[in-house]
Length: 350
Ligand SMILES: [Zn+2]
Ligand SMILES: [Zn+2]
Image (cartoon, rainbow, N blue to C red; front, side):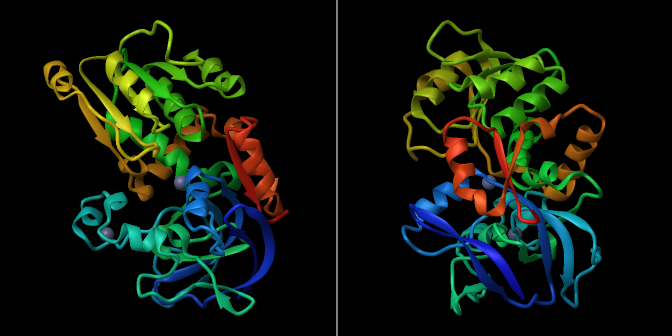
């Protein structure tokens, strides 16, 4: 099937190109992409691939167009969020933790299907595709039916980031840290992940402190009731829970300092891959440090839950989103780096 796709090559300007999607296999579908969020992992991957041509994008939302012969539970015309890929059969998948799928790396980051076959070609040549099982910076994406979560008539630009960024922030609070009413959560970083974490926690009656250097990004959490600070350097209140979305060693160290006894820190941001921990302090204060992927979420469970919260007016996800045309990917990246947006979302439809 012919599609338009955004081709990335390292630092070179991205290019809107004609591409050819493979035919769906029996357990796959083609989704006409209506909206696709830009997530930090797209940028990290683009860098990591060097100059290798790639179609990225992993927060797709759109309408199911073609179904493989064995697909059940989806129909043509369904609006779905396309989340990360998982096998469905390994022990973590069977226990509702698909983020820790035994095949997660190959399915989401190899650029091909699990059997090594390419899913997208440009000018006849296979390019890095099947990113998070989708590669949705395009007018349509080929994906596993298992990755699709039906979402009904929610605006696609609001639903798209539920596939990864919003899922990660919400899941880190609801599944991993689980603060209770009256607890105090420190959220470090006010991008899409941190902001959703803060809003979800506030709606659960948790006190929230958001730390982030960009004034624009502190506005929404503050308006929703969070205390906000530009940096963690000054005097800070102690907290029961902390979420780091930055991966910065000094932020992680400061979060541990601020935790009360038996407090918990969750890590969802990748920076330098090693930090040092004071074992004695962790032990004597009973602290927990917990990494997590995609907020420990099963998208089939958490995406509908978050949509219910949005519909009830408890989670104003629409206020986080800034939209761009599909060809505006580089502008979206620049705006995100400049702190002018919280969650950029591309609209391949127009
Ligand atoms: Zn699995
Ligand atoms: Zn992501």
